[in-house]
Length: 298
Image (cartoon, rainbow, N blue to C red; front, side):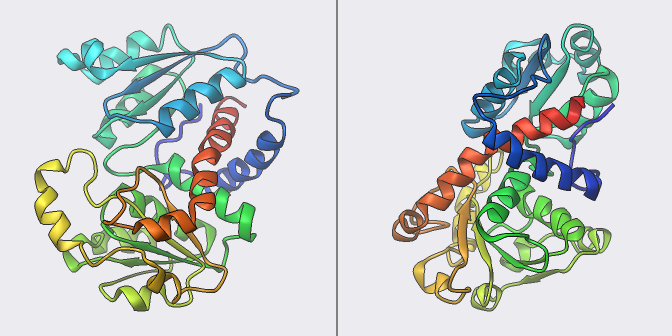
């Protein structure tokens, strides 16, 4: 049985298949010759708020022929202290798959272990694999293969987004530069384990020079609100603006996984100048999510 729990655990061949199939599924939207989820019921179990992830999975499951139910963790027994493994063993007898968005990576992995149904990590504090697969799909749709290219991540370099980018770089053969204050860089042990072409620097301009993609995310992730003042102060210089874009390649893309806080990690002018790419990136969550679901059940 297949699960998508992290990019660290996703084989390169499966990653490439998901990206390739997403091209076909995007073209086929509205007239899929096969409905791989026909007759199936899937659960979305979310302990964190969501716009793009929830909508893309709900629409994607329906467009592939399945039925979907949304379960807020606060509305089921998990929210009252029932062990994950017990919830998993109950739901596994009733549903055909689960998409989980929560805090602890172990919760998703434990659900997959005990439920007996395909399980998707739709975001944890450790990784956001679906987002990065969609981002790579968007890059390749616009610029061709990401292999050998330079991706620069700017901001909190130790959160789930750059960690997922680290694993993608190690498997797909592109260079990843992380520009972040020292205290917001990923642990050296993680970089050694990934063994990809990844560098971490505090010099924002050096990281952006000659890049094919400039990427950023919010400075205060969900669950980090108590650290907001400290984070805003430490990361205040790590934003994308036009001066930084000018240091990258002339055709470099600018991406943001949204929601964006203009004036913080990216200024409004730069966001709007790159809005087409950013909202194509958001739309592509649907197509890549569908490819993930198709891969899980095939």
